[in-house]
Image 1: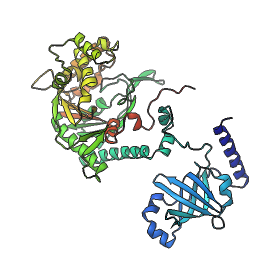
Image 2: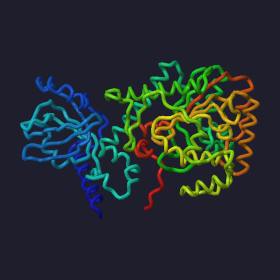
Image 3: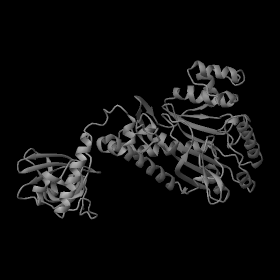
Image 4: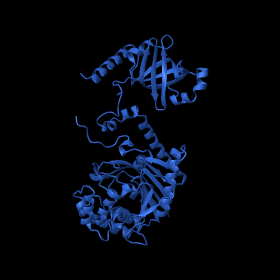
Length: 494
């Protein structure tokens, strides 16, 4: 029998002993009326009057010194030392035999300072709230399989304060985003996650089936086409924050299940939207890091990133020419594939079926992105890569589109929305041809969406922000797994 099994067996016996004594191991009622941080914030005042308080949390350590027991208790807000004393703490004799590290308890007591000067709570009475059967590991980061941290995120959160703080920041970032949109009179809406067609982006979908109607459905790859239907219906400023799903690879910046924010603004274009995005990011940084002297300067991967606006704007094709030496007028599919291969990039069977523009997108993603450190808008993408964006008047081969890059990470994508139903139908048909040619990520023809456009959609600008990538960047996380509570992982081998 392993040590863990032996510990579990002993703790089960303790539960049985407690039940015989009439003590519940898992009561439903708690008397807690205060958090630890609130005690620390009011310590001088409350210790002076010996204010009696109920607090609860997890036992992180136990230390026995004759007739005194010291316990380190943790709740979500912080840690506090508890002091139990024989003759003054009710049911003192039950502590040593029945309480273990990792148990949840609650105590009634008053704040005081020990002889060593440590802020503590003197315990008058205590109750068991939940008996643990397994002890918390003493070390976690030292394990050989790093993915075990993500598989058992609950232990990761218990043992690593910085992990919890990163997820608290994630919540604050999303809250500040909502606050900004609401102040700007945008309405938060919800659209279907299960869709009869996977539209709004170029990606492989997850396929499922609705049994009652015997029909295939797809987990959405983006909410875009439904949100634009709402613009057709008369809404003018809307946004949605929700889950999207793409049946693709897993790496530093990709997880099959991810959180996306999409926003649509009638009577606006991509240039106005870029200015809006600058204001949004500055607002988020101020709300999240406003206590810092220069909240517009962050560190990511040992690089200083300065978000002070305005941010430079660089053409997609100019960037590719400058950073990769590729000119779409001179280079064909064969030469672009050779370039990718020379850079050590794996050439998949699907990539061999790509046309020139699709291969240029691979050059952009796999060679050019990492060269952009400071916040930069990459603009004017080829029309072949942007089936839902409006053409530029200056160059009909390019669209009114932008992507925001920082530290080599693309986390914002927006454009002036194509609202010409005739042009949209042609673009969908071109995408269908690319699907038949082997590009599994090409967008399907959405007849219902084209019909919606035929009823008329005003000039509109739309943008998507990858919440996970934004949080990864602002919290200096090395990959998405660090800022998604439960990222997608390979099954663990027994």
